[in-house]
Amino acid sequence: MDSPRAALVLGHGAGGGIESPDLLGATKAARSGGLTVALVEQPYRVAERRSPAPASELDAAWTAIISLLREGPLSGLPMLTGGRSLGARVACRTAAETRSVAILCLAFPLHPPGRPEKSRLAELDAVKIPTLVVQGESDPFGRPPEGPNRAVIPIPGTHSLGSSTAVAAAVSDWLATIASRSSGRPRPGLGHTTL
Image (cartoon, rainbow, N blue to C red; front, side):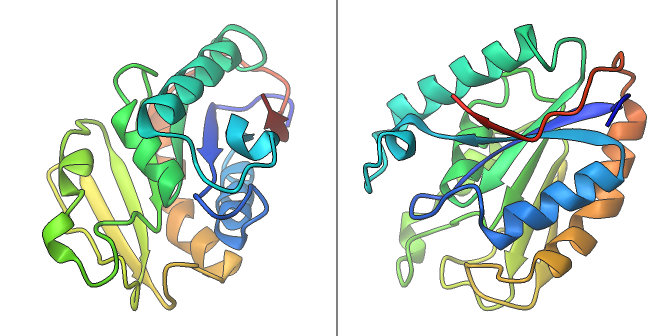
């Protein structure tokens, strides 16, 4: 893409990588809407470790990556951040520090399966910028409620959100609306970034 309106930076879930169908669906929707996309792998995945690092390390790595992208290939572009599951949590916790203009959450894990008392709603509620949550209708991790700056779109499926087409359809209009509010200077498109 020669002149993107904004950038979308997405992180992966705890057990998978950047090739998950929901991330690919969001990527397709973003590119169709005039955004450039960076899919980012956390250092523990790059090192081929199976278990995620502690939250503080994930958040520090994410903010460092966003800073590098903001100073380099995505310079001057308004930046939306997000991800699937664990990646969505990281984006929410770091929204202010990364100066995101909006957050896209795919399969936000509201609570561990069967443990609604262990709610992570505070991580979503702390986000004060526009947020979209796309959640499987049968997600055992729960479904967050809508909020003042938060829309929630249920789609068929579980936590895996297996349909890239359903995800693309769910996020297209929202991404276009957010991107149209911004006015970044054009930069070349970016596909897959591993830092």
